[in-house]
Length: 237
Length: 328
Image (cartoon, rainbow over all chains, first blue to last red; front, side, top):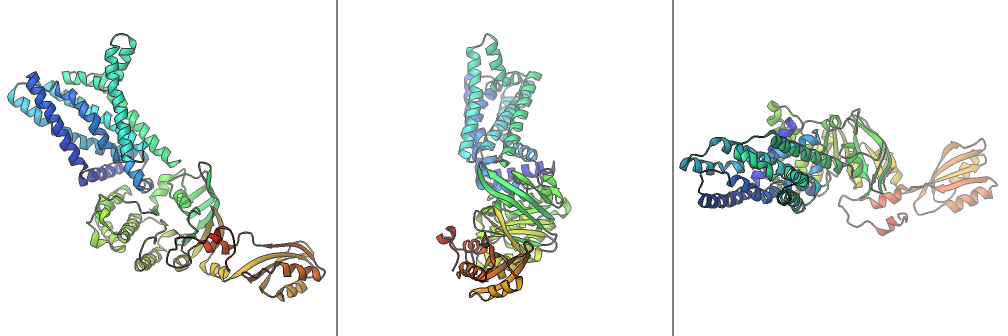
């Protein structure tokens, strides 16, 4: 536990000591602000029902940037050698890094609560869907981050890590389109269950379905497990 | 305290070290001496539980590096060769992270970090970003992180490389002070460094241990003599006297009986004066039986020419050393 927290704190310090965190948050807020205001003008509805699912597009590009350095930088600069000879387990290292990225993500998403306040100020949105929608966005982001972390553990260069994460996320995103095409039949059902974005539909409507929660949880656990394995295997090379 | 037994490591199909065996007693400073790419770093990486050996075992403070890796890691401080540090953290932030990870108690943490920084002389840069430090300071911060948590074993890979001569002296002095309370292994390719800091030396070349001795013993073996082994059937005393008379022979040691009538001798001779032909003539000329005559297989000389013998690091190793021509 102490090791996990120490790693998390170190990663957060690094994020905010370099321009990365600020640049990422600024760009995210800029693009999401455009999405929000456009949506507000066109839909003319006092809710975030169209805004929250749209976030996944921005996250597709932003999350690889957040996660790319986590392991790739350590491997590239050789600091991983020291990190792996400290008395902490590989699991603690992976969890610490994941939590740091998640905290940065929550800070970033937290700023969009401002949009929610605007909506609440000018209209009467239901608070239930708003809250469950944010829960969904937080969990979906955690999935994105865990996959990005895995990608970072595979690469020595941050650019490769980012491209790899982007590619993997894109595939999971395209699955959604494929599911729409094959809407009928078992293949479509399977694909739509696999699609990450699809599991945001229910929470945004105000439905908290255990199927979605199980999907998110297993996605995160599997990604983190693969990351631990990938980090471990680096020792044997 | 540290025990390496028959360590072998392959990277893919490339052999890095083979059958490396040595022991380090508590409080001792052991020097791993060898030319570049001899296998020093690989040996250290195995001892620090960074990577597993292909075969063989290593124990630190009684714990196996493979089976009880966390216990081993709790007891070592490691300074890797190129001192990898986080450039975006300040020295203090970094050492705080290391202290937490090593489980230094929260109440003592701040004071402990101050002490460590004082010891390696980086207090004046405590709040500078590591990325902005000079090579000398980075090296000392690297030493500091190894010392955090007061581990009983220190493993230092080329601790003085890249430092200016004054810093080198400081670091060597520091390492000497650390001995006693800590057990230290340090690697180097600089010959005078071991005689200045270490109590015992293990020489590694091409992945195998070729000699283990005290620095004084090594100096003696290096004082320009070459060793030749002879097995002769004949009266021991007479053979000995005859061998001593050969020009170029510095000393003759009896190494004992091989069989009832065959005696073994070790001859120290001047480097370059190959006395083997003369030895053969003398033995045969006296009517004794010459059963064996050879120069010691792995001549230390050949390894030493590839080592840096001055304090200043030399960039190109002499080509003749690689071809195995003895030093003149």
